[in-house]
Amino acid sequence: MEQPAILFENVTKQFPNGHVALKNVSLSFKPGEFVVVVGLSGAGKSTLIRCVNRLVTPTSGRVSVAGVEMTGLNETGLRAARARIGMIFQNYNLVRRSSVLRNVLAGRLAHLPSWRTLLGNFPLADVELALRSLDRVGIMEKAYQRADTLSGGQQQRVAIARALAQQPTVLLADEPVASLDPPTAHQVMRDLKRLSREENLTTLVNLHFIDMAQEYADRIVGLRAGEVVFDGPVDGMSEGTFEEIYNRRIRPDDLRGTADLHLTDRAAGNGVLTSTAPDALENSTQETISAAH
Image 1 (cartoon, rainbow, N blue to C red):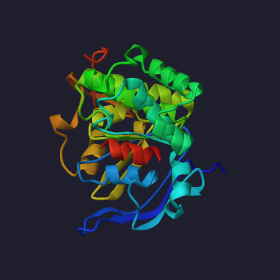
Image 2: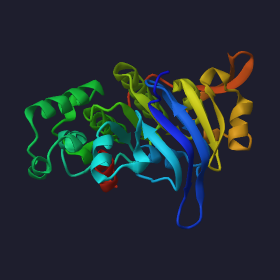
Image 3: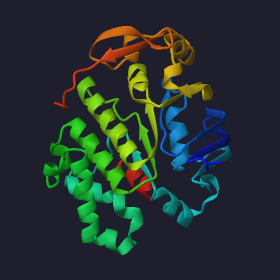
């Protein structure tokens, strides 16, 4: 039997204010799966994926990555495990005053001794890897620009390149398109899906937009109030399924497509909300360092 790439076993997370973000969640993800986690704000999506690299530590239960129990690791073990878990944030989490290349090289931090990173002394092989990573998301020509001179979509591609430079086996993306316009959002999702396929990455992406979840996911996990209320292949999703996850009717702000919203008979006779978008290119830093370590 194939070992799960990520395994949640009866995971509960209660924050100090009493809020229970996850309630006895058990999930298993296969190597190479591209999974989209959907749900309303506050459903527990961010908490779920942050338990994978232990930016959030579960109150009870276990989370394992490639057979390594994350919840039991000490600081040294956690640093080693995080080296193979890339993470992309909603607000990019770049060092805005630094160059694009320096931001991508941050993905190598966990692979190098501390003295090198403090001096900014990166091996040539790491610089070449960072440049290749930028090339794979189509912005290598921006390598020596300051990050704050780039558009939002370009900054998110820098963040993807930074994660790619880690040479991860698992990729986490926490609402990666929430701040982007629809054409740019689709471009970023296409990049994530392509790179996931090329690198055989197990990828978990949190999305609020159900049309994008349907378009890009292999599998969808639906969360409501910290509980898993749906887990299945994208072809099994219907409008009714999304309404069950959201516990209300679908609204326009649940969709990210630009126009031409319609129902399609994709799921064996079940209406599924989709949208069409033009095939166009896009017109807390500390947290990133923690994830890399």
